[in-house]
Image 1 (cartoon, one colour):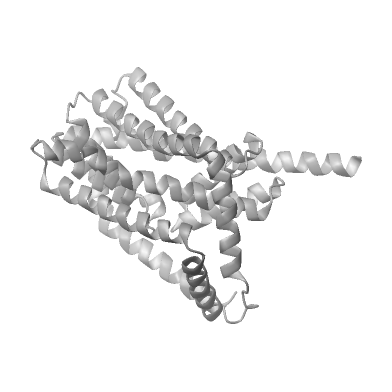
Image 2 (cartoon, rainbow, N blue to C red):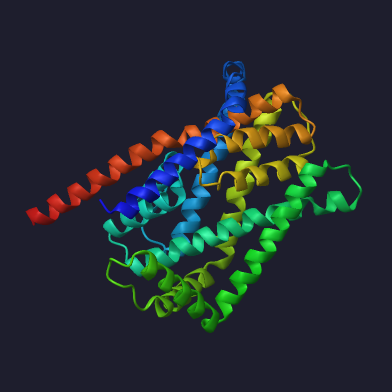
Length: 336
């Protein structure tokens, strides 16, 4: 194996180990509340599972729109498998995306359509997440008391949304700007991977894929936007149900700020799926929203049970089903 690759993987493992070490004390204390989840009413847990499953369904609809509406089976199987890998591999977002891309291509979708479609779906999903704190602005404007930490989370989300919106708008509207970004990325890639064949034509490829994405989303823009928004609102609903299950009654607008900040924490690539960071961060933010420490811990663990842990085996099953479907198709093609 290339020495540079070994060094890179070693650095990732060290950073992950150090991160786990730093969050381990708080995480151990938090996970001591696991037995309390068994005391929750099954109806609450069933409602959380239903909301989380509906959230996944909106992701499949959104990706289906951005992928030119293929059959839903490869979209569902690849998203479940990619989501699971992203949650167990350090820095797993890239690995999960690569797995979904490969599974969709293996299923017969065009490479260019898959790349542009997944990129468009991810961008729209991330943009709507960063826009969620704007829903709490009226509460702040009316003078409703809001903890300082939650205000900072809202301001961070608003700032990130503004930056992403500006950059995204420029790249969507300007071929020149997109080609410039493509040249920078191509140059950086060729320098880092100098021993491999040089990458060429990336700027024009990005422009072409962006144009394809615009045409695809343009026909289903309303459906795509509704799906992206519902994806987060349904998952936010699962957190509200978890809080209701423990008898907590915080203001939903403040919980929304904590939820958005927790989703941003999940993007931290130093631990798989933000494990440790999300639990500790969400618990602390819920306390700022007025939930007792004990109730915040139980609600966080219940929410993470349905949003993080339960989808993992579903992804493994999806990967196996995908492989068997491909084998059956190849066997049928060989037989004919």
